[in-house]
Length: 160
Image 1 (cartoon, one colour):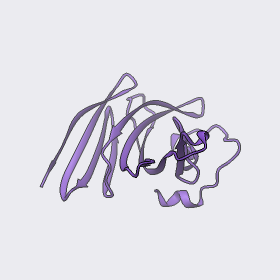
Image 2 (cartoon, one colour; image 1 turned 45 degrees about the vertical axis):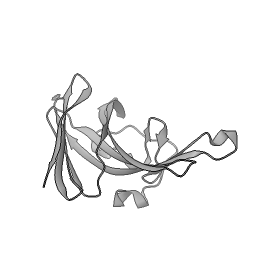
Image 3 (cartoon, one colour; image 1 turned 180 degrees about the vertical axis):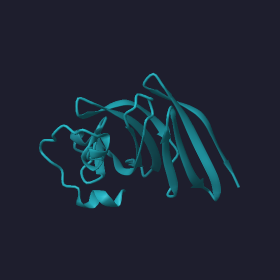
Image 4 (cartoon, rainbow, N blue to C red; image 1 turned 90 degrees about the vertical axis):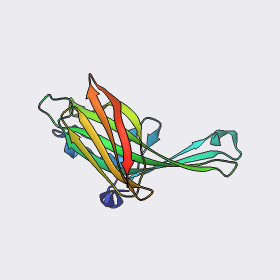
């Protein structure tokens, strides 16, 4: 989780912003998950009253750049999710979310699965997102191309 999220207090109402960098990503909704101070939980089937699956999602990183080449900065948000199943299974995943600013509010354009690692670097360039990370002792990279509001995974691999 980003260290800055520890002190990020959720607000009841959020005013429009003039820059995507002003968005409070620590207290934001991403699909079914709402983060508060950088962490969100989804309890699947909890309403049935018994054992249920749990997803714990944390804000891992936010990178900025002019992804769609319109002259304004966009944001790519990396979330890490831990899944705990009722039968004891545990898994980890990560997702990228692309946001633009429209009328002072962040608007999600797309999301894609991504690799999860403790050590990583997320960068945004015109029409490209790159995630570099260390996986099982190897240097790895994943790349996505951005076109017409969509991310497309174009390359990925690791080398020792």
